[in-house]
Length: 575
Ligand code: DGT
Ligand code: CA
Ligand code: CA
Ligand code: ZN
Image 1 (cartoon, rainbow, N blue to C red):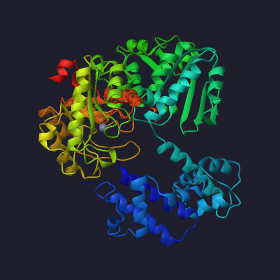
Image 2: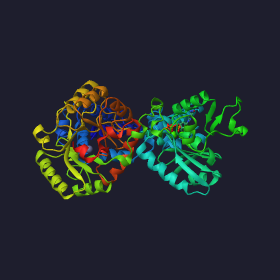
Image 3: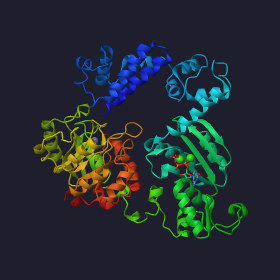
Image 4: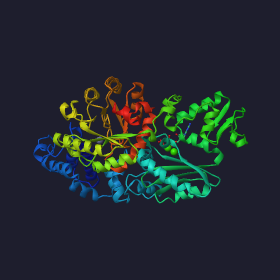
């Protein structure tokens, strides 16, 4: 999956390292050019297409590059590049990536200034240690500092799958501190956004000291960025910033509402408050007495401030779930009671076993699904063209399906469907013949290769799969990887219209690296009355826990239980 992209990445990185170590320009260019060629190949390389004899026929790829490519495809590493990388501090790659910093400068910073990564670069600038290096005037140094801050702000968004566990461990740690009566994470994380800029944590306590100290002494903290009485910011070693605010218990609801955002939602609520002769801020909802001075500073008693519910209620609204507090969704209270929830999910319709690239035996997979209280499980291993995922030949598929049906007969409390995750080829045809697919209970069709097609081709490709009479659902329809690969960009409106007509479901893959369909797509699917399955695509037991990320995205998209087959009763699903 996506091996060309990671392969190209290795060549790009090698070119950068060669630049830093001062290799000759000819060699650097050759390596960089191969990286470009790899990015543009139409299909992912496999052991066959990456044979050295075939690769050298590609213009720009010489014998030594061909051997490296072959090594990567067959072993997953390139020994020569690993050696190259071990020759410089790992953090120098990030320094090179800063806008305006060329390899010669990085080399000077490293050799003459002892800079090894972004953190040491920043601290050495602050300490004035780099001023003696040629061409490092005050202006240049301050530009570099700005670039570091910018890269942290813009490129620093991390996947929710990484941010949420970090936030939960911090919340758990701080919850035990003396004086802390309430604690929650807020911000984009609470709204379930797919990427997170920084983690916002809110504590209610009469004494900010203990919670603050608990955060700053957290073993994962790399640097304390700011330490005030009620506001503290730290950077974790993972590169994530955590903002902690400590507020009095009676203001917790107002603070939680404010710091959950979104900013646009806050603006809307504030406007609504004004229209009702009130003032809303992070301290509470106050009567508007006409004074320009902040009401909380004048001892004005708030109308509501202790809980979010009270504040919404005082504004004449019902509580809006955090996932819906984006600008576009403000006011969409209509479906709130009908939205999908994690406990409402009763079926996993996309899961893998050791037969293809999963780590669970069929029995283990079934036990996992049973332990989650599911009434239905679809076993969907990969099809034959997914060679890298050990996809099943027709013979293996049919034998596997027979074993799945046998197993199903042994478990009266769960229905185990014999299925497949069949590749959608570049032209939209499927990886198995119809007569093979017709023998299965459940067919997911997914794109795994040729994920850089132009939108029109991608639309045609996916439409072909959606309108195929034997396909039940389209798996991770765009194939994107968050922070990794853009994936296909088909005309979702067209896909939804066809999906509705042919009653083909579109999947929301819950893996936090995918979240595909994304929230906006789910919203579009809801408008078109298309069914959306929420599946974890489990490859190992822990993957079942990824469901919550899919639920967050589904709720952001307004997905109702009625439109989500995983929430249906077993009998309706079988229908
Ligand atoms: P992020 O961290 O970039 O993923 O996104 P958020 O939404 O977590 O944003 P963040 O961390 O800057 O601030 C947290 C919340 O605080 C934000 O969602 C709303 C509130 N907030 C922060 N600054 C402002 C502001 O200037 N105006 C308003 N209305 N609200 C703000
Ligand atoms: Ca935030
Ligand atoms: Ca923040
Ligand atoms: Zn899968």
